[in-house]
Amino acid sequence: DKRGEAAAPLGSLGFGFVEVGGITPRPQPGNDRPRVFRLEKDEAVVNFVGLPSEGVDVVAARLRSAPKTCVVGANVTKNAATPAGCAAAADDHAAVAAALGDSVDFVVVNASCPNVKGGVVDVKEMAALLEATRSALPPGKPLLLKVSPDLNGKQRSAIAKLALSQKLDGLVAANTTSRRPGAEPTGSGAPPSLGVAPLASEAPSRGGLSGPPLKANAVGLVRDLYEKTGGAVPIIGVGGVASPEDAYALIRAGATLVQLYTALVYRGPSLAPSLRDGLADLAAADGFAKVQDAVGADR
Image (cartoon, rainbow, N blue to C red; front, side):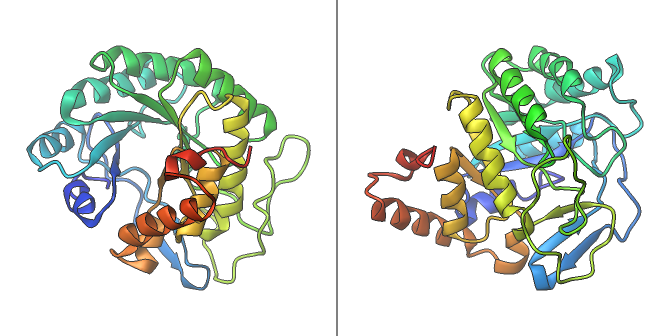
């Protein structure tokens, strides 16, 4: 929900939480259109939106005046014109966090957008962004970090250590990928393969890919982060969720919450209650009293 307009209606559809954003300090238009592409044969999407935002003042005011139907979080990031890896980038994050105040229930630092220059933040620079953001938030406001699906093993370990040292309230794993199945980088520093066949649809070479092609990668990443943090950091699992079985795989891998957006394009607004009811049935079939008891069961 880029503009903070749909959080209340989405809650009414049955979703338990909605992430708004990315939200930048100042308005910016994002990338030129066309910038969103459906890959219908793969039920996937490629977006090159580039973080369009009306600016935090407009979005925060809209959220404060909206009815509350679910938990609402905000995804915060820098303006595209702000250089990455500098004090100004940290200041941008802090400015958004301060302006949001109590208009949201949790805040996510977006360090993994593949569609803007400097959007994928080096792990070494993440601590400064997190510290600046936390310092601007009201005391006790949950702070999470959204990571890339393209992390290699060394980077995954570094993220886990960072989450523990910063006492983060959660990790969001993960964003869209700039990789394409069948044309992935290889070598010692490459991330694990997406593990799927090349796309059936013609896909733009640039932009973030989301949907079923990320499913296996998301489950593996969640499992890795859960193991490396010892289950001490809650994880929001994201990637390829289109059915109760998809969501349940992420939960058993270690996700406490599950997030989606691409499947809404193909499955429609009835998706939320079908996921809720299906998850309850799957957990019961495995002998769990509630879905929460299945978190990390595959560890």
